[in-house]
Amino acid sequence: MFSKATYIARRQELKQLVGNGVIILFGNNEAPANYPANSYSPMRQDSSFLYYFGQHRDGLVGIIDIDNDSEMLIGDDIDIEDIVWMGFVDSVSDLAAQVGVTKTAPMKELKIICNEALRQKRPIHFLPPYRFDTKIQIMDLLGIHPNQQKESASLPLIQAIVKMRATKSKEEIAYIEAACDVGYVMHTTAQLLIKPGITERFVAGQVDGIARSLAQGNSFATIFSQHGEIMHGNPSDAKLEDGRLVLCDAGCELNDYCSDHTRTMPVNGKFSQRQLEIYSIVEACHDYVLEVAKPGVKYQDVHFAVCKLMTERLKELGLMKGDTEEAVAAGAHAMFLPHGLGHMMGMDVHDMEGLGQIYVGFDEETRPNLEQFGTNCLRMGRKLEPGFVVTDEPGIYFIPHLIDLWREEGHCKEYLNFDKLEEYKDFGGIRIEDDLLITSDGCRFLGSKRIPYHPQELEEFMKSNNM
Image (cartoon, rainbow, N blue to C red; front, side, top):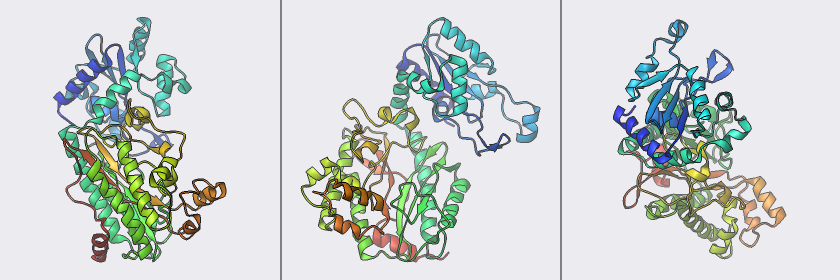
């Protein structure tokens, strides 16, 4: 938790930005995995509730009455049955006092508060819900059907929260750096474990164990697969094979803030010439971001600058052809890079994505092109500002079904060498990802130690394997 003064200041700023009405911030409840008493563990609190009210306990709702300049924490105190099974926790009034809130009420009072606001025709601001129990609660309180709640969510509240959470304070940056340091241990452990014959699931399990041992847990489900061409490849029971590449995309959550890194390694510890040729392109694109990302620059311009560099280098290998500017404008590069360069990161690994990516990653001058494959997956395009934390994650993927489809359709045939692409159908994919802080005059990677990724450095590190 931050200081009491931090939460008081955040709620005060939120009132000023939203202007009037009543704000309802729903905390999360325990989520049953397969029967009521067996919950997913640990419970993950809603990030915006955490940002303004700071408490992790389930079954809480925060009320901010802008017009009356008052705040309230809603929730029921635990009973003796809860204490027997789960231990004693602070009362709702104690939890409220810890974050500078003086008023509390049991959950049954929430309906009365909402009814009174509706009677007075005051605006009731809530965020787009993503959990079914919250959707049911909103329907009971406000009479809005779950199918209409996303559209009924408060745009002023969304915009205010995005404005506040997008720029990270020094304390928040320190927490992200600490999470990145745990990420270093996660990824270097994977690099030292990797060898032919070991299973994907085993290595991924060790990575997950570190996240649970040194942090709150994973910031997202670990991606670990020899099929790096699959963006979200789950670890399987497949054994790592000599001569193949394996991709590890993993991060942790520490102090409610996330890390997110990706590395791609040769299973046998040594890149082949063909692997090195592709890997060096991704490495160059990854490092190029450090040169061009800075305040005032649109991240979508950084994305397309990377795409042009990638196209130039792929032309040198004979995989692409034609005019680079025209090829990128036509979306030919998306054969190899079908996702965006990165996304916002903070309390959520895709920070605030649940509020609507159009509000989080874009501004008045930038809008995603939803009509073009690849660019429709950009999550971040807006002008960069000091204090933003974004990921830098270029990749090159050879997706057999996509190669076949585009060849059959003749899509971007002016810019793609399909005969050459046939030779790479068994290649897999490569991604390199780090977390980037926008500073006052440029940017820097977060974390006190860099996870090895330069080819010689990576090979030497993997060679030091004593496990």
